[in-house]
Length: 139
Length: 341
Image (cartoon, rainbow over all chains, first blue to last red; front, side, top):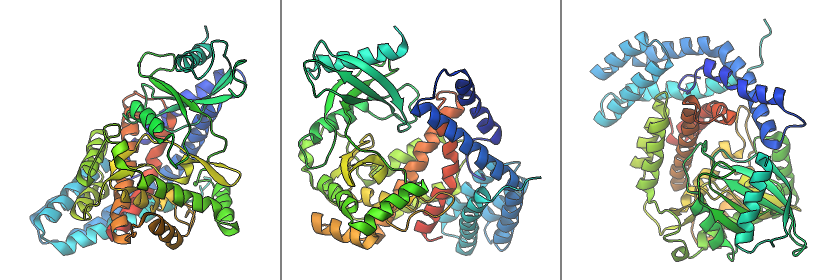
């Protein structure tokens, strides 16, 4: 969701070929074709959950990261904070965080901010799974 | 000749060339079955008047759209070398290395071993494994004993036939694949690579490592393990990788809901480690195993990321490659736990 590759549009497009193959098939699908269709149904379910929860999760993440970095003492933290605020999407977010954590690790500076950012990312892993597992609201 | 008939004939021709079936053998059926993501797998039914025992075989193919570039020839040679070893594996019947084949790539044929495979991410399969554990632990015993037997094999037999990687080479191998395939930089993954290199365990003598040892890569027949399959990630290196990989929550069936409390969905961890230690003479130290568990998670992310990249580039149409991006949060969860974040 946040640092996961493939945009939702690519996932939707991925459903086309197995559906077309199923529509054109003569007879029952073999195990491989069935597997493709089952993966497709799983993508539908998971993607729906992701799209429903993504905006709120990203808003939460930005706010938490800003709080975690507010007490930062190093220039790297200040730069990352600006980059995250301005990040147009998750790719830029991932880039900024990867660079920040590598810089803090290699320099050994600002251990407290490093720990706070890591704690946010730890909580993010749990929240992502909660979003994916959440029952869908039927609007 | 239709594609299916062409493929069946290609497999039969290979088997004839090594004397596994007679010139009068004919294919009755060839069906693609669901397999791993780097191999296409087919079940081939054969009737041979000169060999009444001829029956069903498996054809393993490395297709052009494999999600990971692994050496099918190595896999074949490994099966050959394991034929007389105390780890149950299917007998192989010839390897065709050409890339232009009716199967779309190189392939080899092997016996179809009786049994079925479980999927630890399915509730009913985890329940089946848990019932076996509660009942008599026979499956769990086979699972540990086969791993121990594998790790006790004399390494000299496999040198030159199987790639060798020490700890750093193994980590850098997967990091290279992650960096090639990544579409988005993942701060948790990148910190995890630094963490494992910073926590490199003291080296131990090299052994044959399965590389993807889990109950889903074993066949179960009558409550016992009849075959250990899927050796494409095998290498000569640190055997603790197989132990760490099994320790991932993901490999116990964790996805959106918790998986089994049993290690690898098969056995209580203490029991497993004690039995393994007694069988190999190698004490299992969890702090060391945790490092290899993290490497296992990084391996999976690298492989899936590679597949996703191929999918994004239009080089594979396998929908499972796209689906696998939903596994990343689960593996990240394993990583942050192991790193103690």
